[in-house]
Length: 113
Length: 114
Image 1 (cartoon, rainbow over the protein chains, first blue to last red):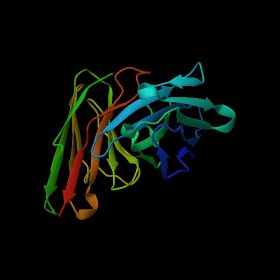
Image 2: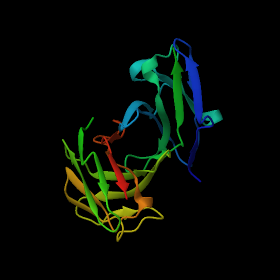
Image 3: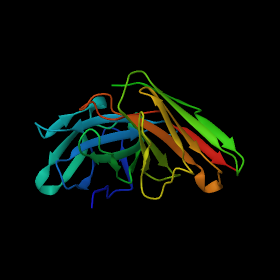
Image 4: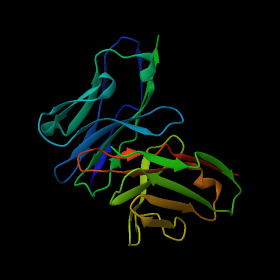
């Protein structure tokens, strides 16, 4: 079955610390992988995506993610977190352009000064 | 990427009534997707809307409860019918303008049913 697992429901980090949010997926075909961020009361903003090619992808706001096929993972990283990064982060997997997205349950990031 | 205008942004409705949510896209897209995000939860796909054909509903969602219109390639509506408090959620529309762009989401409609 197709699924996305985000093992960490809630993560707290200090401002300036590094961050890694975990995402594991199960998908029968070639996966297209996405990370979205949702600030309180807002819609979803695309941080980055992986379709093919270089397995390390760069996104907006200083985020990057690495696709590891052998581990079925697509973890999101940021070397130095800012207070404005506090939000809910969703990993999602899809297939061809006409396929639906399957979302993980999300990780809530809290940033302390 | 596409720009989506979704409205209303929020509403408080009486149980038993219906609410229609609109999504306008700034470019033509083949498919539009409607999602529900229940409080504190992730996103669940309700249905996929193609222009000129009936929407395709996911398991657990039915047309009588969530009728969808897709009159052209830039617009779609989702109606939440005969609402109950369990329908209180954020409803979002989404499109992918060109393959590889990534999916763009509307800002969402926060619905509260009282």
